[in-house]
Length: 422
View (cartoon, rainbow, N blue to C red):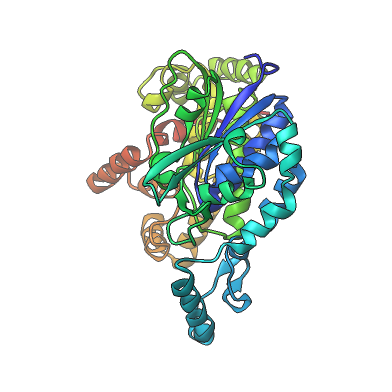
């Protein structure tokens, strides 16, 4: 894939989930991908000028510190760790916010406007040669507007950015006497806008935002489609852990889309040598599970993996899923295998300790533990319980249910039966 030729970057709307765009942008810069045009909606429109102006450090700082008070004018007493905190103790301030909402016809986005006005140099952007397009909807005319920078009156860039991001419930921006609302009402993923502009090398970053999300029609184009591989968070979710993980997910998904990382659910550095060594090890082992794993298209594998000849990658992926290994992280083959073995030892020790302490069978102890945990344990935990009574009819039924819910389980258990690699 030629990365030196310029691309158009299409950025979807999605509120707080827009931190994903920041992670994706970090990856694109590391990969040396040249982007000369940006088309965005809502949060996608807001971050696009930062990218076009090279304000990458500023974006990273925003991702680290963003909270509800970055976007909305909210009494400080209602904000805790960046999120809206509502309780009987701050009822007076909540009523004040409600009155302000009624008076202004929506939530006040003055902090967001101030951030844009401080950060974005409109004159420099116009002189940069970078193309910038946004989507919004005129409430006054009930018409969508797809605008590029040259069609925006000078001095009104921030107005149009705010218009693109005017989520229903926010104060509707007014430009030249016309009210506007979030462009997601028309097109949350403005891929078609980029096509109409004439772009055919397009990178799409889709974050599952609210609104009209049309499936891109990529015929006759060179399109890289990047989508969040894990569903999490909401458009006004400013939980710090979520924001950090979703930013990192944007980075990892983009690296995988461009082939720097590989994997299905996990993110792995390519490991050709490890694959060859694993195949040789399986061929030497005189074990039924080794023979099963050596069959790349065998029934032991989930359907989506059956044509993949990377046996070690598939084995690690299946075992990681069964053991609930952290997904939002880049692993080497060796690191992931070590983590899998560590987690297996931990789960085995937990089950044995419970059974020994209670002086009851492993399965009885596990059932009680599962009840207490509200069935939140990893699939390997339950598979271990079932293994305690392999000839039991209920046990066989549970095993089939587990394998149906977790198609990776068969291959995971086979891989975990292998002796650890040296």
